[in-house]
Each structure stands twice: as structure tokens, then as C-alpha cells.
Image (cartoon, rainbow, N blue to C red; front, top):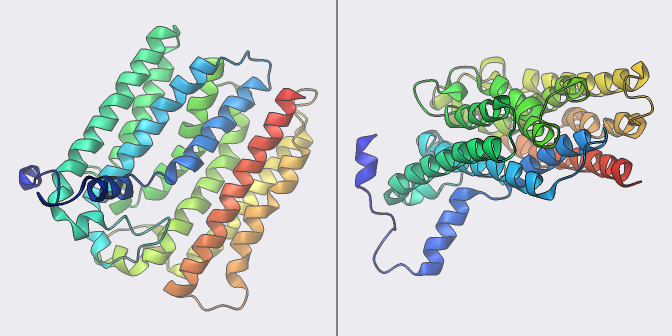
Length: 322
């Protein structure tokens, strides 16, 4: 690891500022922030729908903590995954940015930026806790999220390489991202939030299996032990269908239970849960199981996932304003 710190920040003395900025933007992969923001917004709106007063300052400050941690993951994953990414196929959502493959002189910069962003996120969590006299659990939640993102690929834990990548992603999507939003608004994680942990975790599993499928060959060469590598593509696709079925069934069960009666109508959210379910099931529409089709399925599944979360946010927003 020490050798990476000897690299200069930029590829060459003659490179233009625009080219340098372009490489950093590619490393940052800002498009990943959108889903994180929508999950944060989901948690915040869920808390607000229960009668919490909306504070725009708290909303922005809370998201800043999450956004910085997410950006840190983009840089750290590219750095610690650079050997595995040599053999991967780059897509919008998988395979890494390839920047460090083409420009190894940026390795030191990527690592430093990842550490800087992670540190800023942790400092932000401490600042939020102090500024708003928040529970120390908020600070711990922010720190846990940042460290889980760092150790997703970083040693010594390297979750993605040791069979823990799916669990970490389920926790991130099911608990941490929406949880920080909910906590920023309500200063507690109560039954209203906990009811959504299981279905969101199911969609977290759907998300990570979708991202992993196109990279089975490169992940195998890199000695990663994720589900598609261990069980194969077809079984991973079946598991994606099961995950979305469980997510939909749990949302229907929450609606039928009536625990939100008079506070939040989950009917449309339960109905819209068929969107990711249909997307996952479409993988078995007579197409071969190979990298090309998995890349196509990646687009279908991610579009369905993003659409579903956006629609849930829209419904919660309507409930809050009307």
C-alpha cells in the first residue's frame, strides 16, 4: 500500500485542467449518489409523515453526512478493487470506473480522497449531534455507515471478498441510508422505521445481486466469494426473485396489519412493489444466462429499483403535503 502514495496526483504535467477534473468525476461516480439520496429522503419523509416538523437545515446537514460517506466509497472501492477491475466489464453500475486501471498514477490521490471524505463524514456526524443535541446513536449510525463502506473492499475485513458483501449492502439500503434520514428528522428509530427495515433489506439484496451478476468471471479471478460466484448466475437470479417477492409480501403484510392506520396509507406502496418483482422475474424470459444478458438485466433491474424508490418517495411526499 505504501507505494501508492508515491504517485503524483495528476497523470502528466501537460494534461489540461478539464482532463484532470474529468478523471476525478469518473472516479467519484456521482450517479450512485442519486439512489442514496432517494433512500435518505424516504427515511426523512417517513418520519415527517408521522407529524415531525420539517427542518431544512437538519435535512441538508444530515444528507451531507451520508453523501460524503458515499463518495468516499466510490474512491475507496476503485482503489481496493483495482486488480479485480482489470478483468471486469465496465457498465454504468458495475465494473468500477477503470480510471485507476488507465491512470495508475492516480492511485494515491484516490486513496487520500477516500480517507478525506470519510473523515469529513465522521466529523459531520459529530457536528450534527452537537448542533442539534441529537442522540449519540445518530453519531454511531453515521460512523458505522462510513466504516462499513470503507471495509466493503478495504483490508483487513474486505467484506466483498469474504462473503459479507451482500449482508453489508442489505444493511446499507435497509437500515443505514434511510435510517440516517429518519434519525435526522425524528432523533430516534421507532416502530415506523423498523417496520420498513425488512422490505428495504430485501431490495438491498436484489440490488447487490444485480450489480454482482455481470462480474462473475472477474470476481472469480479476484477470489471474491459473493453469491453469484459461489452459487452461479442462475441461482443468484432465483434469489433475486425471492428477495423481491419477500419485499412485496412484507409491504402487503404491513399494510394489512394496520399498524399505520390513520397515519400512512401503504396501499399504493404495496401495489408498486410489483415493479422490482417483475423486473427480477424478467430474467427468466427465455434468455440465456451469460454476461451479455446479465448486463442487459442489470439495466432493467436498476431502472426498476430506482423507479420503485422514487415512487415510494413521491407517495410519502403526497401524504406529507396533502
